[in-house]
Image (cartoon, rainbow over all chains, first blue to last red; front, side, top):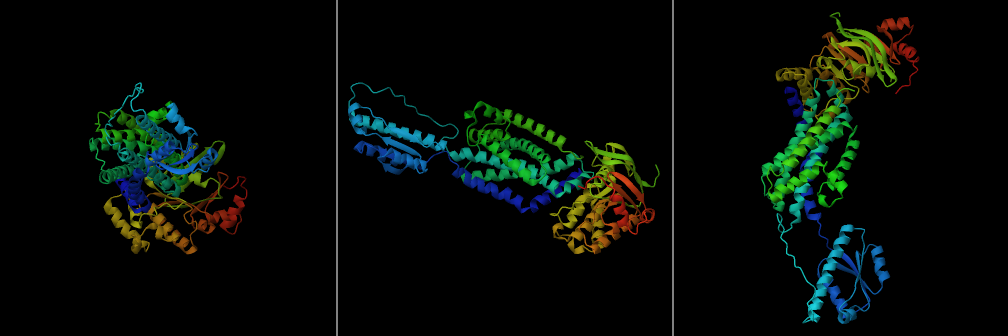
Length: 372
Length: 248
């Protein structure tokens, strides 16, 4: 116990003396939480539209002005030539091409039927998909407008319509930030837990102090606990700071019990710290550690359900996410903060992450060789 | 085993795959002796030293350090030795006092002991005003002297020094060796590796390793006489030239 006390004393001194770590601890969460939820947004605005108008009719103009008035589209180019419009797409100036054929108005009025053509720049998949969907909705809307204008009393009833009204549970106004903030917090806690800890150990390897530690009576578990405990504490501090920030900057007030979040975070941190330890035993210097951490973090975030829903991933990817601790914490955070889930509701996630903690730490301790 | 023996090795061997780094070395180091452990780069010095410190398990042979077995009692060995590695091993981002406190603490020394001895030590080193400075702000020579003092702060029976004076100026080297003599006078056995042949002259006895084996072991005077060499430099060159193994 006394040995551990001296180790902890040393670790905390070093951590609080290192301006880089302090910056990572306090400024990084602040910036990430202040900027990311405001910037990372699913809504697509400013879709650049290039219109090929071969009709030059009243209705064509009405349609175009309706589209631009929606606020989602910017009219980039208005031309009569399809090739010219496609050239705009090739130059990446336009995202969408809408072609209004020559007899648009005539067909619409006479035949009750008109066709439009849409070409989508699918390089940015999300923007293309959403843009096309928005455009379709606007055109449909325009369509029914025209119908009501022209067909005052229909000879036969128009096609059957099913109107759908929906209500959004747990996040009634579909506040995107409410959804993102908890997720970003998870990423922050993970970075502190796994990567600061692993870099810290690798640093001792790099400067050679670990060799000195190895000839002292410090035991394996002393050394590991000496590294785990400070970063566990730091992880909890970062989580608390983040929760405060979420509360005051975004009005994110957990519906569920804060204690539930902390209980889960406590176990979760053990798991990611175990991962950090493991990384440190397989890397020889901080550069390797950084690269490996960076790689892992990318996978964790992209397969963590933070930006994209896990349910819509292909099956093999869903299997991968089951081994991703970040995915569990993101899920739990959202459950507790938005839904008010209790400890009983998250018991499955808690168990899984607990198992990760045991497995990763066990592996790390076995592979941390005090003797070559 | 005699009460006066600090380190005893018999046929100590370390193999990495089919490479034999240390090839059955045998020697004894008396208590309070300054034992020079010489050899060209790659001769196997560091590997031998790591086995004696309990950092590396031997492949074969026997050895005891401070009466403890290098196979089974490595934790007891660690408790009874001091070690100063080739690489500077104090924490640069801790102050002088914090380094001392940390290393003394992990050897189980009491707060009172640490406090008293720290004050005494800083005075000895003429570093009273540097106690609260970060170690990284000290000149290299001071750092090395401090590292040595920290290595013997917990009053071990044996101290292992792995090229302790690399890169240090001649004056500081001389001061460093005065500290070694003082430690030996206080009964600490000193096991030291070096590439400076003038330092070899300061040792009570010197062993010279060539290709993993100890080729010569005697007092500097005897070595010079038997090899008809004028200096330790010449002794070393005569022996080390026989090496077939490439330096690392």
